[in-house]
Length: 176
Image (cartoon, rainbow, N blue to C red):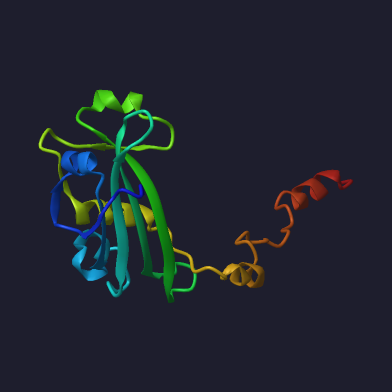
C-alpha cells in the first residue's frame, strides 16, 4: 500500500476506477456466516475474516487492487472426520480490466479482474471468491500423516495364491 493512501471502512459496493485514481485503501471484517457460498463449504460457518483492499497503479500504469484476506476456516478433515481450523492468508494483486483483451497486457503476478465501464466492485463478493478458492478440494487436518504411518499407504498386500493351473501342469508331467 502506498503511504499516500487513506484507510476507510469498506462500503458494500464501490467504483474501482475512482478508488484507483484516489489511491484509496479499505479495511474490514466479515462474519463467515454472512458469506453464503463459502458457508456451504464449511463444517460450521463460525468466525470471521479480516481483509484489506488497496487501489493504485503500478510503475507501468496498470490499475490494480491489492487484496489481503486472513481467516481460519472451520473444515471437516476427510481423513479423520474431525473438525479443524484451516489458517488462510491470501495476498493477491488483481489487475483491473475493462475488456478481456487487456488480460494479455497484465504483468506477471497479476490476476485479471474484469470490470464493466461503471467499475462497480462488490467488495464482499471479491473476498468470498478468494476464500472459496482457498478451500481445499479434500480438506485434511495438518498432522494426520501419523494415520498414514499406522495404516500404511493404502496399498493392500494380497497373500500369494497358488496358480490354479499348477495342478493341471503336475498331472500333465505325470507318467502314465
